Image 1 (cartoon, helix red, strand yellow):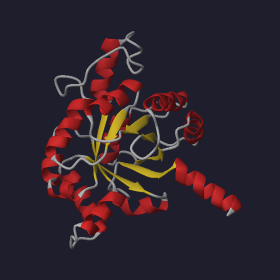
Image 2 (cartoon, helix red, strand yellow):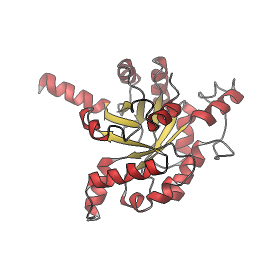
Image 3 (cartoon, helix red, strand yellow):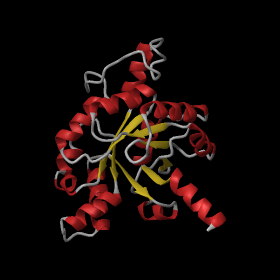
Image 4 (cartoon, one colour):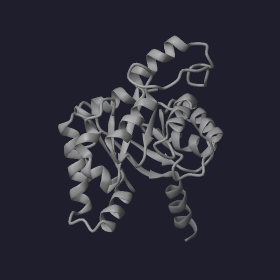
Length: 248
């Protein structure tokens, strides 16, 4: 299995292409295996918008591990307990939605990282081999846990410099859907694409990797060379499009 954090850093430096993978929102280890058999660079289990219970998320992580595909978890929100639990289950990192302030970014980093960088607790969980290799796991987690935050609110745009200045953030990931809704609701005289460009430029200036969600692989072309990681589509959209093509 690739070390996703190291590969994100390499992609930021232009040493490799952007890492690409889907959201998995269907609560099914079987669907997870089918997705991983296609050999994406990673998958991201979506506990924010998918009806995925914690025990199901852990089983989906097991399914991804069978194919040596690294799995992130998008937690339901910027909650310390949810972040720690996802990592205990064996996620290689977390994608934290709706981070809108530097304080929220600091809280996400603290929940995901062990002391001295953070406040995450160490226990006999799946990720640590149920306590059989705690010292080795501690070293590996410190070196390779991915902390990705979603920039998807108007408040996040206003606090962008302060958010990106928080140590320990690996990836500033743009959520275009919610960001576009927020810009329209706030009647901001700024296009969505201009806002996205601003986030990616600010991340690059801070030597932080940028990320983006797109619905399809062709949509990713606009961001070629500007993002280190992209989530393209989801299992649910692939299923929907497949059934529509077969029966629609």
